[in-house]
Amino acid sequence: MALGSGAIAPLHSVRYALRALEAVARRPDGVGEEELATELQLPPRQAAGLLRMLARESYLRELDDGGWCAGDALARLGGEESRHQVREEKLRQALESLGRSVGAAVYVGRYVDGELAVPHACAAPDRPAVHQWVDLRAAAHATALGKCLLAQLDHEGREDHFARHPAARLTSRTITDRRVLLATLERQPATMPVLDLQEYAVGTLCAAVPLTAGATVGCLALSLPVGQAHRLREAAETLNEQAAPALLSLSL
Image (tube, rainbow, N blue to C red; front, side):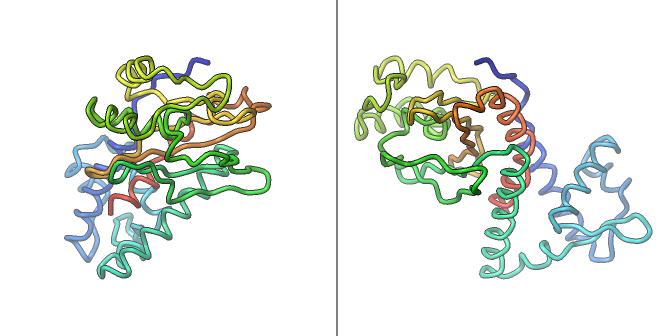
C-alpha cells in the first residue's frame, strides 16, 4: 500500500511556534500580527494560520485590536510543576483531537535507554486500541511504532536493539530476517509514514510518523482494524499533518 511522501511539516511548524511564543512572551502588552510575521520571516497567511493554531491550544490569545498576547496555557508554564501539568494536559487534548480526526486509536511512542515505551495512548469504544498480546518492547521489529523509532537510530543503535531483542515471528507477515530489517530501516524515508500491515497482530493495521522533541526519539502512531484498510492512507496523512500540537506539548 503506497502512501504519499509529503514533507514532515509538524517539526517546522513547531519551530516557528516556539519562536512565536518567545516573541509574545517578550511583549506582555501584546504584539501585532504583521510584526510577528515579519519577525518569524513567514508569509502573512502562514503566520496567521500558525497563530490561530496556538490560540486553539490556548497558548496565545487574540486581542480586540488584532494583536496577540500570552494565553492561559503559556502563562501557566512558569513553574516546573505547572509546566508538567500543562504538558500532560495539552498532550492528552492533542491525542484526543487526533484520534477523532483520524478515526483511530492513537499512541505516542518513545525510545528511552534502549527500550521502546508507549507512555501515552488514546482510544475509545469505536476506536479500540490494538490488543498487546506480545510485549511491545520485544516487538519493535513488527510494529509501525517500533520501526519508526528504530529508523531514527543510527546503525549501531539498531544493531544493539536486535542483539537484545531478536526478531521473532508473530504472524505470517512478520519480517524476521535481521539483514532485511536493517536494510529496510536504513532506506525508510523520513517523509513517509512507517506501516505495519498485520505484522504484529492479525487483523490490525498501523502507521507511524516521527515525533522528535530535542534529542529524544519519538513517534505518533495509529491503529485500524484490517476491515478499514481503505482508510489507512488518509488516516496516516492526517496524523502527519496534525501532529504539531502533540509535538509542541512535548517540546515545551
